[in-house]
Image (tube, rainbow, N blue to C red):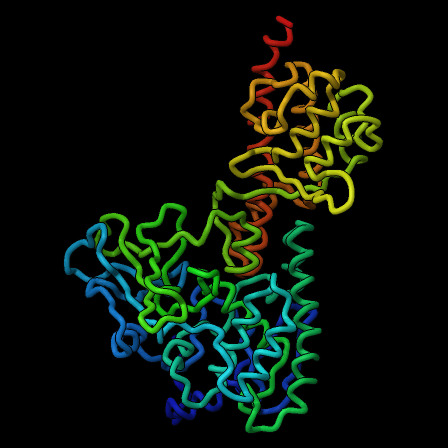
Length: 487
């Protein structure tokens, strides 16, 4: 936790907060200071990032003071690897299933609100310019408003937020390249471009707003501060009833697990006066154990882009591919399949249309990995187009052609050809990475900077995933051999 500047009172520290932190939003978004009143974020990275406030208030006591409940056994502890988190650190006995751990009354969650004045009207107008897919920026604007407000009710919460986030938009340029994965690079570049363009829109809007109606109390807003706010919202907000994203103080310090020991419960509707949000224990939680929640069953792209971490291993991780006829022809020929016709399918186009892989509005993104192992639409398309018997195809419901665990629905020969094509697609996907697994492991052993470690760990997990898929598919091909001989 950062020490307070010599002679600075908490009020002074907050007043000067926006003028003293450095700015960096990846190499393409570096900005010089726009004056002493800019809202900006730190470019320094650490496993446990410094808090915004030099001496942030005790968050547990603030929640309790504002009518919330915190289980007596809970403490906010600083983990050397994961940073601040909530743990059952007190020696007051174990926590039992069903115990309420945290309760936040409706006034504590931070969310977009209905306009109550001219300043809120301007904020809502800015939020309306944000694409729905970047919902975190909408909530981030509200967070920035409270961060700039001299007497914000939420200052004890905001002061405990990190100065920076380890999401890729803040990576140095070299570490963005180190991701080596086109789908994620596309998303990072898309967000960076949005922030640069949105900065201009915000400043243009604010230039014509009187100081009394300024949603950020006269503070300057640039791409760095917008990036910080969007990252804070994306990495800490929860969507509960009504899909309204909210920042939940203290609750958002619980770490992620696919097998969590607690869950969130919302009672009452979002706009009702008696709404509350609770964290309830799902199992016995022993002393010193971290309180964990499931953030969702997502691939590592999602976790790194929005949360700034990589899960190793992640059973829900995937590699994205594009359903491209020329690519599939090349993969089939490399797999030894004769006369593939993916690039110019003369028949079965109706089935491809039903799979949404052909025609206007087709969704051509398919995937490998995750619980399905092979995207069901991709596998069905391979089976259909590699089958020499159209009548046999039309006897099947499409749903029976999509699962990988189906017992060769169009026969072992077609199945082997489809699986060999998948195997070749995996090999092609591996070739898109510029480094080998042993190179990545050597980099990680050298204790690189955190952003480099995250980038290398991300691409390494993608390679492990592809190899796991290849091993799974190879086993299935071997199991088909006796069937083919019998046939």
